[in-house]
Image (cartoon, rainbow, N blue to C red; front, side):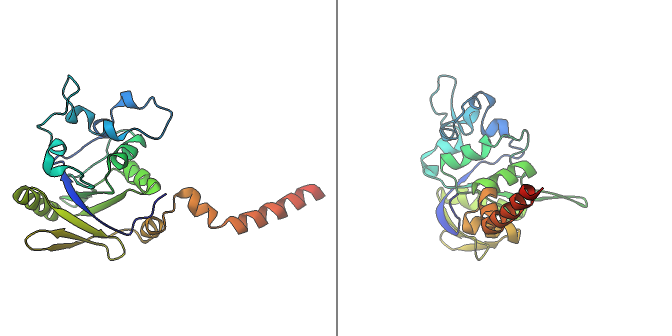
Length: 213
């Protein structure tokens, strides 16, 4: 898969929490046996009117979000079913990363992303970034005020830089193992192949032992 290091792009916003995978990619699009062509169906029920034309009321259909490659949403993004197609749709639309907030409820920490969606994202090279609710609020307000803003995501430095009249920098945490995988473009197969020599040696020894029995 493609590695992720530094990316600068237009910020697109979907100001909704609990965006489940059926909203990201409705079930009728899961019949395809291919892993391509899902970008047009991203947020299908929001993006299109009944006659199939783009809904001008939906944020991402407006000119100011044209070409957006960084998505900012609310918490619990990607909840619902485990369909990997949701990640494919997000990426094939053109998004390189999704940013969402964690939430504090009493003593509980509510994550920004559903676990299965996050894991599917890691395996496909989509960067998911969790920051605070206050920081996401700031980003929404900045985008609303400016109309169109760009952001730079620096994965090695674990920083987000929002470019505007003044620049605002945010820091984010990420699991070191996940960071290494994304920087090197390693899916689970790629991780396994890093040990190809050891696996080959083991198989040769195993085959010799079996032949001797």
